Length: 381
Image (cartoon, rainbow, N blue to C red):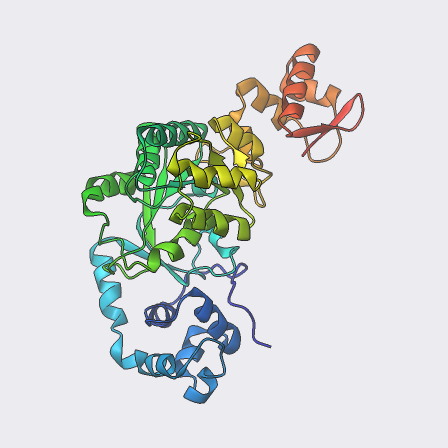
């Protein structure tokens, strides 16, 4: 049986030949993320896929004669070196799954992009990210809520992920930027082909304090079918997604569905009961999405991280709720181990009075960051 190409334990920068093969496979029209994954599971590597015989390719589910011809002709018809040169000229990074800086959160989804085009910078803080999406036809109420929540979460230390679309997406990016935070924009087209065009200035601001990302070639047109496909990347990059205003048939609801399938949290902002753009959010809440009124609602609900996230300031975050803590609470939490820790030891390590430690432990327990084992011992959750 061939190995899956989820290369979570292989994180070395690819050779130029590996990059060329991976990029060529990704640029074949009709080879979407699921077919690509099926091909790699069958043949083991992009080079083996491109070298496979037509009869072998036809054995892969979803690969018909037309796509077989495209795969066979890819070596002659797709100018990968031209795309690499274009990206180099315009400062666009190309990340494959085997690259060190490929986002860990995306490795976890069942259909990760084989290639990411990135204009800007990803950094370790982006492991603590939340998606905020909603309708393009937003009300003033929706725009205010998106900016308010985005700003609050950005100030707490979360990266805001959205899609650079009109309406709620743009408000989410602007809220993060106004708060001095980081934001990532996931595009349906290429990172050198900004859509909508009136968001070109916003895109430049995102690049300065985050990044534009796409799985499409750098100058690709944003075709209609790519918007639902890119939504899985917004949720895939995030610990959870917040839906702010969405009618019953909405791309934002597709993002919510992707989030559920990927095991991410889904949050929804309630709207006016008679508003068309509130119906999707209200349905999500009825179906079990968490109702959101403030940034704290989100931070309290997000569970422990699968992998601790380092911050630029040297702090190691194990749980997003830690971002809500003041200096005193941080000091007490830092003195608690994942094994049984006595209150006497916490007092000694923190240098704080016993009563202050006890009252702070109550706060940490309420935030579900520690658990009491007995009257005199606690453990970090």
